[in-house]
Image 1 (tube, helix red, strand yellow):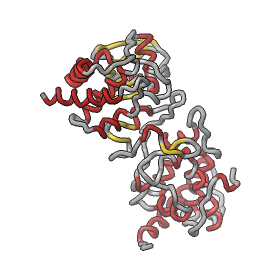
Image 2 (cartoon, rainbow over the protein chains, first blue to last red):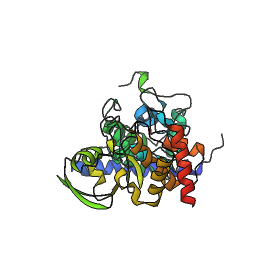
Image 3 (tube, chains in turn purple, red):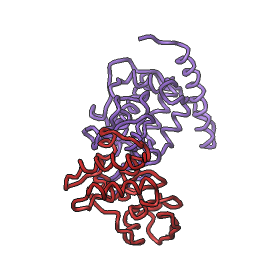
Length: 209
Length: 154
């Protein structure tokens, strides 16, 4: 696969800045000097990313990050009933909008959150191994032109992302706390946001929490 | 809690729990019983109304999300040219059998025609597949939508 080195290089610099900022922020919040802990090693960063990858592959997240144009539903990830399609703007077809049924909040059995929609095709995580997923997350051409700091904010604060932990009745939330996922993401970034080697696909079925 | 919304062009104020589905506020508080309860899980389309012009399932929308917005129900459908055409076509083709789902069908059809003035069969099937009819009037619904489009073309 053709790769360019400019963008990953920029991201590595960006990751260092973010890591520095996080260390400084940690010190400021505690009102003390930042502890002189060494940055995470590459294996530690990769393990942290595996936690992030497990969350992103959970059905609450992956069902709306499909490889094709059909959203999925349930833990079995079956195609969305009523033949629902992506549509030109990822919010459904013109006459069958996501917001026809999904409001900005859960209502009884009907799930909802602000801006309920499919993730763009560039954010299709289905079928990606950990390596490809990490590359996709870092690639500003695929991730909605987000820096790692902006991704951090998105993962930590976005209400639609947060729905994965409050999915309403009859749906299992992501099995680890959101804060734990964010901590893992920050550890990965602090360790250089290195992509894991190809071949592994981490899921909660692997024995993680 | 007091909530203000505009229903069929008229400013209305209701005293309701803001989490109450819009459907129940329309039916129980405002007496607009044309909109029907079918499944309560946005799966049948009987409760379809328009919110700021878009078809939605009123059983799945809390009333707080309709506050300050325009709601159109079957009772107000004929206030628009598209709505008039839908009603005329429905009557001409005698679409209704038991009728329970038909308010939702008409609201969905009007939204479709607002988006696609000349829909083909596939467009109609896609737009209407979320509106179920246990009497099986689908072929008459499809024909009536074609007829409404014809009426609108003049």
